[in-house]
Figure 1 (cartoon, rainbow, N blue to C red):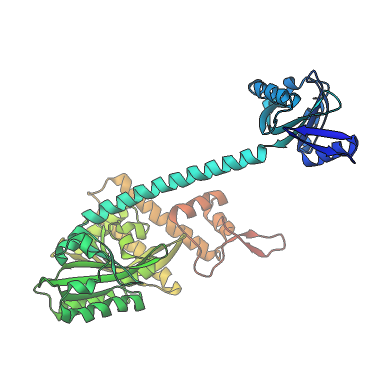
Figure 2: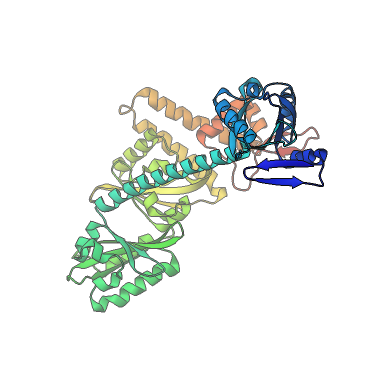
Length: 481
């Protein structure tokens, strides 16, 4: 009969012999060790990784203290003493020493064998728990870092929102009630900012205007396009409103910009603004430095931008791949001639894609502030090549006009880039977009050609595959650089 004692109770296995008890302990434990009265390991069994088997096999006939890290030896002595004295000996965590400085953490329960002065240690591997704790700690640290980043972004947004010169009100599309209003908007509506939140925007306008305000928001939600209108506030001031729909995560919001309406504005002015906003042609307005002040819906669709706010304030050459010098040459020509017509350009649409456009521009000298107006229409694939050639010629003429204003080395570099890009595009057209053949025609290696393609942002025409080389059977295979 085998008796295992634990605290003040004992489990009597009257029908189980020692071999069966040993098999049971071996099956339920990750590591089981038997030590004699001198604390020497006389037997052990484990269900650990195979890579640990060789190291653990060498523990037999060695004092158990030699295979335990120095910091865990007091815990080991306490556990063995408690087991020999019949006290509780469970939940003792011990760090074993392995080869190459590795560590094996084990949580033990110990019991003294009744028929001889030996102690059985039954252990559970703590590595999975330690790894899980490490993952939880890393996840918590990531959550804390994200929360800190969100707090900083919210503080930045709040600063910009509160100090913006525009009067802005955001409305929850689901409830139709104001979520936020900056101090500028509160001043125009004649109410403190905290009184605006949760209210309906129409309640701050005269009763005769409220139905128009409700219809304005409904039109924005139905069409998804910006809508403009004017209305008289409760204070008697005529305000111009511009509303557009946008998303913030799972929320659908309507952003309404408010401004005092010009006394001289008439229906013709409003009709002109509506015409330009809804025009088929893409329209951009910039300041004298080429920074975008306003963009209509067609430009947003052409460039793949979700909101006009993502374009306002950016340099115009960001959307066309021009260098700062090329942009300055273009602006000088517009300013010098008053306007340009049918200038070929390629607008960037994201993901490396480009779309050819026919661009016209005019200098607005009497604007407030003065600036430039750009009007562009997307070109078909057939007309893009012809327009590109005229655009290159116009760019070259612009370079000539800049002689004496720009250093010669900058002019030479820009002119060389224009010619080099034109030659590469022509070679690709002649070779059917086969880059290997194009490189051979230009006298370049394929690696050099790929570098220049990336530099100039040249991509395959719509619907045309990138042909890298010919397969052994003579058929062209598709691929990219």
